Length: 263
Image (cartoon, rainbow, N blue to C red; front, side, top):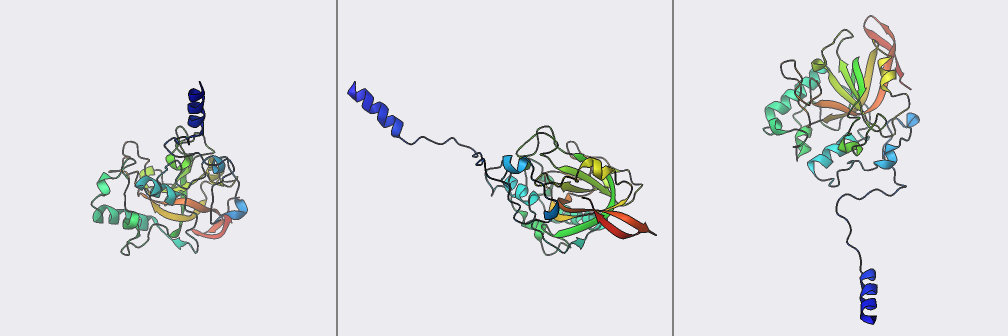
């Protein structure tokens, strides 16, 4: 009996093996913006506490998936913003398709292991640059609200997922395959940055500023048709995350005289 009791006590004192897999964050941990491109408008969201890692729920930050998620959550591209056009973004897309042999193999399950190809000196703009695109809103919607994305810890609902913005060159454009993508992430998202408020600005000119990134999970439209499981777009180069949203509130002769922040 004494031996059995001794064994029970010994086993109770032995360190327990930790469960494998990503650990849950401490309850008081918050997503760390590090930089604050829209600080006056910041509003803490539930996801800032439930999904505080810049890599989302991807435990290995050095993996291809982890690295792309970290880029999506980079708020430190800085200023000033360099003006970027439709033509620039198409040129960047063409350069990647032409110069990177691995490009055809990339998809959401096979992301590039080396993102230095998006920062080559030969590119007119590089991933991580602070850029500004001026155009018109085609549409805006909350993306991946059922099942979420790993960057947002696969959380359901509008509040915890990106706002996908399709931008076009003219107010009369209707083809989403000719659109440029911008993404407003949910972390500390300003209250006024909603799909309803964005849509209400049509057909005014809109100016979106933020980080330039290459989303290797998707492919652009082929011959004017979106590929299966891919959102329609002209280029895989996006403004992601968005740092600033401005609306033209005074335009004359095709020139905007007054830009007003959406707030």
